[in-house]
Length: 475
Ligand code: URP
Ligand code: ZN
Ligand code: ZN
Ligand code: ZN
Image (cartoon, rainbow, N blue to C red; front, side, top):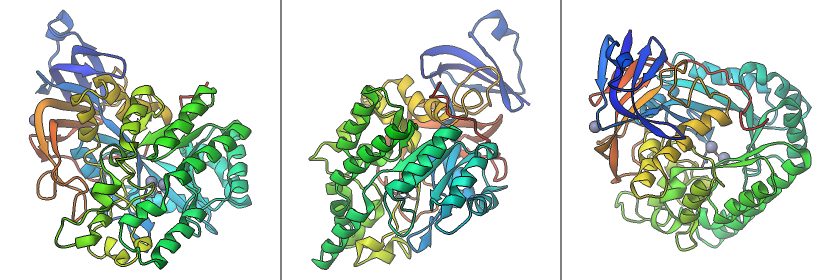
């Protein structure tokens, strides 16, 4: 099967050009100037007219949590529903987090994750490894990860009693990662302090979702980010800080990068658009009243707009103090899931679902002039590919690359919301009512058209496991 995508503007992280793209089987085989003799000679089984549209490499969401057991329940998207929603939104690869907890074997956690995902994904998928219990056994097990195609792992300075690692454990893991070439991903919030603040608020009768954001103070994100950076400095290990939301954490990353350290930062759409005041403090939905903010309980938390955190995230994306935008997709329904924390914000399962909307939401930064078209592609596809050892196969439109391609219509329109464009397994949308300039028209995953004409044509099981290489951000 050959597909010719004709007449579009091919956008990469470094430029844009009018070009026709030929796909043969699962790969891109040619990118040619339109109107050239070469282009004139091409015939294909299927022709997609991309006139007036952007042709971009499929999105890579490097931070997702399908079916994550968390907060006494389990994230509501399965690998099937979550990757179908991803496809709808122009994301053709995900990197999910396999989980190892204290006392469990890393190998068992990883094989359980393969079990959940295998045969169920509509787009390609890889894994990072969560090391939720650093001990002799898990440190030893890290040695096998590279062979498994897992070249990055996540630790938590937050969530005591669940995934939390102490500084001495982090030091040991970073030393090991340095030896193996693994990228350390860090959830940088001071969990023990946050838990005390949360308990004090609860005891004062401050129990609504808003206080989740108060307890998880930006000072404790700045502090943990700094500590992670210093431990990385000491061990000469590269560091990738996930879901950055505090302005002061970006300043820590910028300072470390200015010193020449290999530290990287990711933010998420929620930290670019949503806030403590408007969302965590929301009371507008009559079904939920002062519990409505639970829809947006995630960690790190949404932060105060008055303090300027959202603007700082956009600035970080422009100045390259932040390198990537992932979703941290970790959806929970309000009914029976978020509801577990009614009357006690500490018991609300943490997470927001956005996998379907990341490309559209970031594209709004192009519309408003906050980032360039090329930077949009870089933040959502090319850098994730390079950061996590997929570049060349993914993250770029060039001969030899997988035919993961999105035809994006800048003149199209997308209305986000349940009952509109929402395909995630959630009973609400964190983005209800958002109106998007732009539209994901066609999505091709490894040469198969999975979305076109407003319909899903893919299937669970099409997605393949991605054995990733080492990060391409280090020499
Ligand atoms: O609230 C969040 N972020 N839930 C997912 C787990 C994590 O910390 O990434
Ligand atoms: Zn986290
Ligand atoms: Zn996460
Ligand atoms: Zn359209």
